[in-house]
Length: 554
Image 1 (cartoon, rainbow, N blue to C red):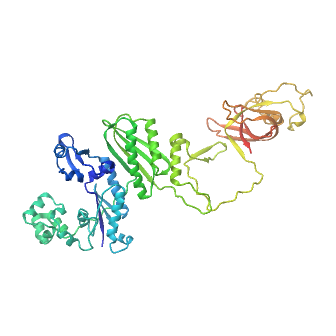
Image 2 (tube, rainbow, N blue to C red; image 1 turned 90 degrees about the vertical axis):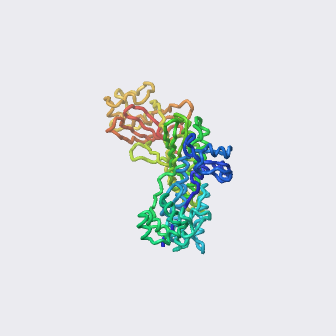
């Protein structure tokens, strides 16, 4: 037999407003609908009701009864957030939830009482729902029965949770007034003229005669009085985003009051995320401007987080960099939930950073450096060694056991220089026996005498397309050990100093990429050892003839 739980928030407009402004709890507060003299009270706090304020009064009448009454307008943003929180409480009871009204939801809890062992399993289930709602600052009444109608009536009773035993729906409804069926006004007046006062009085009438005299509405009322509710539960799917917001009491023109209200909304959202074991992966901020403007901001996070302090910092930086175009009268924070990073403690391995701390640190770095400067580098398929891509920072978990470092095999590690350091290459006179001659190049000049020309920058006479371009590689091989490399140092001294005479050279290794594009890359790489003892990787750009230091071997 099906079991339906009804979750009801009494005085829903007031509960939603108090949830957004918890400092008003215990005060004489009333929520109004309408403007000016047409404003009427739709809900009042217990303190205000005890002093004579009633729903249906105009605001002027209520102020006449209670001059210190605190009046608040109906806030659609607060009510939407409170309704989503109510649905989330229902999803903690069952995956099948029906969204019946702003203040009312149903959940199919058939078999769920086995999760609460004992004679009062369903009552414990209702108490668990009330505790979950209280953690989200929502008052809740719970009713459990075999039909939606009986569960709704049970939820409206003062005692909560109210559990109707299976098969006892008709007996439970029999002693209650007809008003609990929420009948049409004309139908209720007709039944009152017949002298019917309770639901049981209507259930004892013959069903065929009630239908013949009152029509289809009377037949449905008689079925409800007998505890029969043929309406099935219509499941509601959870939204893709979680929303929190409110309307401001007055238009805000500075950032600080707006951030204070946004901070309270983010704190309420954090508690909702914790209930579902989720985190915020993306924050959308919708601002309503006076008189009819609107703005939408999107803040993407490098990792899901529940650190609302980091989120509020991101919102502050966003608003300071792009202030709203007008006074803000309302806002809505839409958080796209996602599963947070999982952390696993190990007995022997290295400790892992807590997922929330890691996400908060990444969010703060993103706020200070920009979203395009935070990530993890990855290699890109191509020939150029400086090519890389940035992906979201998602390190793998540490190893379960501490691993010993691998023993080296005599390999050298190159420390890449980014950006490459420009070099000035100067030809030095050296002992001819130290040169590496090419078999096709003469060992001495044609006249048989050594050249006495002064040192000159290398590469000027070997521009691409010149007559000597074909022999440039062999000239370089023969002269590479007579080159002096001097780095062009920067003003702040951040560029490493590369200076010395080339003693040993290996190369060249050619690199050509993107010849089909407007900016092709054509280089030749060398590994050189300088007189000062350093070992470097350098390259020459064939298009310009310029030299660069690309890395240092450690």
